[in-house]
Length: 94
Image (tube, rainbow, N blue to C red; front, side):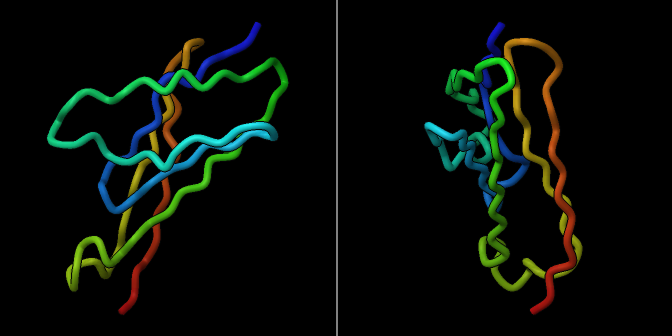
């Protein structure tokens, strides 16, 4: 049976995520604004179909304070189980 990626969102506005399969692409998605609800995207995946998540981090989003260690998370909620968390960590240098 197919699965549906219902939501994609990130832990910070400086980080966006885009989902792509062979036939379609959606995004970029970011952090929900001001605690608002995360909109559903209902991105279908067929059995065995692969999807690629491209994550972009923009250190300039934090101004001069955007240097040092960062730890960000991309969340994927799907129709068939627990949410998936993709974490990225980096050391941002000026």
